[in-house]
Structure formats: C-alpha cells, structure tokens
Image (cartoon, rainbow, N blue to C red; front, side):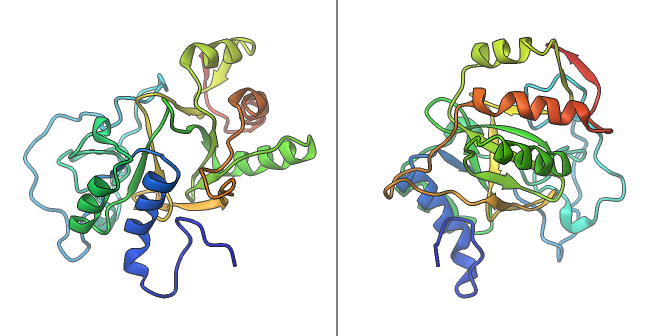
Amino acid sequence: MREYPGKRRRRNGQRALPDAALTFASQWQWPVVPGAGLESPRRGRRDRTQTPNTNPNPTSTRTSAPAPAPADRPRDRACACPYPECTAPGAHPHDPGVLAATTDPRMVRWWWERRPDAPVLLATGGRAPSAVSLPAVTAARALTLLDRLGVRTGPVVATPERWALLVAPYAYDELGELLGAHGWVPASLGFHGAGGYLALPPSQTGAGRVRWERAPRPDGGGAPWLPPVASVVDVLVEAVAAAPDGGSRLAG
C-alpha cells in the first residue's frame, strides 16, 4: 500500500505530523512552518487580554471582509493564538511567522519535537506549490469536470468545508491576466501564492481534519507533479460562478 505524508497511521500515530513535516521539507523541498494550533479541550479557553481583532491571515488575496468567528464555536476548536476573534483557528502561523518557513530538516525537527501536535503549514509560492481553494461541494464538481475534460490534476487538500488544488508556483500578474479574461471572480475562490500559506495533512484545525482528497504522487521519489494554474483556473472559476452559493462578484 502506498504511503504518503498525511495518511493516517494505525501505529505510532503521534509521529504522523512530525514525519509529514519532515517529508514535505527534506524530500519534497516544500518550506513548512508550524501553525498556531488549537487549545487543549482540557484547558478550555484561557483568559485572554483584550487584543484588537487582527486578521491573522494578512497574506490573503481575497478582498472581502473576514467573516467573524462563530459565537458557538466549541471550546476545543479555539485557536491557541492570542486573538480572541481569530478567523482561522489553528490554521495560521503565529510564532514563528510564515517568513520563517524552511526546508531545513534540523529546524523542522526542532519545531515539531517541541510541538508534535502543531499543524503543518506550507508556505506557498516562490519555488513552493501555489494553490486555488474553493467550497468543498463545488470543488468536487469541478474535479469531476476536469477529469471529464482529460485535465491532469495534482494533489488536492481537503477540509470538511473547503478543498484546495495544489498547482505549480504562479506569479500574481500571471494570475491576474487569467482572471481578467473572466471580468469578475467569485469571492469564495481563494488564491494562495507568494507570501501565503496552506494547512497540509494530517493537521487538525478549527475547520476540521485536513486530509488528501487526491493524494500526492511523488515523481521518482521527488516532489509530486503539479499542474500549471492556467490548466485548471477557468474550470474552477466557472464552477464556483455557477454554484447557487458561489459568492459575491469581485472585479477582475
């Protein structure tokens, strides 16, 4: 049976996150950094000082205002960061920040030896994979259409609410030209390029368990193959635009 980072293991499950982080960094040369993680359910929500409602995801390219944190979020899903109204619980860098992401196995081991339950975050763009994310139900339909059209896809990261298609690194000016052909793009599409980040399996975040919807297939022992964004973005935009809950329209 094929083994790949993020696959659940029946034995020695406590090593799943550190081992995945090391594989991403050292074998695939994907820069990673630990995520803020979630508070322990045994501790409950700690007494936090009043901190401004700062969005911990300053690299997002979406221009809509961040959604407020749900008031009924279970305590065991609260983010371990100091922001009381965190909009991405567990799934963002905090200390260290995203600029510290590295492929150095010594640093990766040091981080996860101290925080073995920390989510594994990929620092997207540059020489690392980029990604396009969209609502899960719409993403499933888009993948079916891509398969029907014979378009080869790469790894797909999934949470219960959103999926992300990993693609080859893209520049934002390249992405802008592709999106400009549509005139507008739905607000529910997310773009993770240079300066961004994305939680990888088998991380646990406030959005739920992160898993592979389509597992990576390393090419000859190296990093998995990634499609160019141009081969998938048109289908993704059209799929979200056609969905009943595709989101508001943003200028292209």
